[in-house]
Length: 132
Image (cartoon, rainbow, N blue to C red; front, side, top):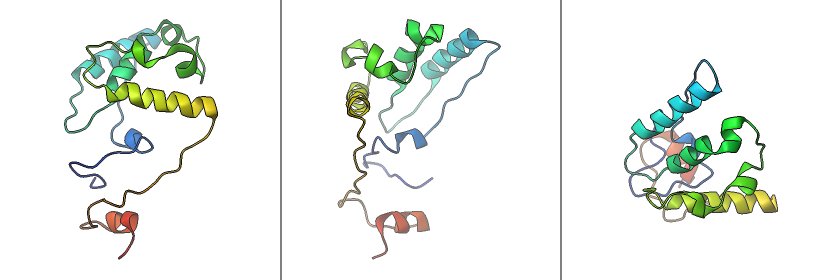
């Protein structure tokens, strides 16, 4: 609950832990429709999200048909695929980084920022930033 504070960057390795959006339906089509509606109604402030990328995936014919695999980004996505009206330009950057990582099959190391605020409050923060 207090791992990130206003003004901090959330590394791509941790952004999935910020929130999860889950839908269900009587079949795949209904679940997709509910997810698209949920994305439209989702309200997250203070950070940029990958919701526009999620919308792109959910509307892609390969995903809708179920005819895709773990190479979806490599095979079906380029940053130009996101509509210019997408409010979040960083989505394209994240997708490009993920594509590059998948294509090279290398994982970048997680690097702690040295300019992070001093640990205060929870033990989690003190452990994350190291006891001083």
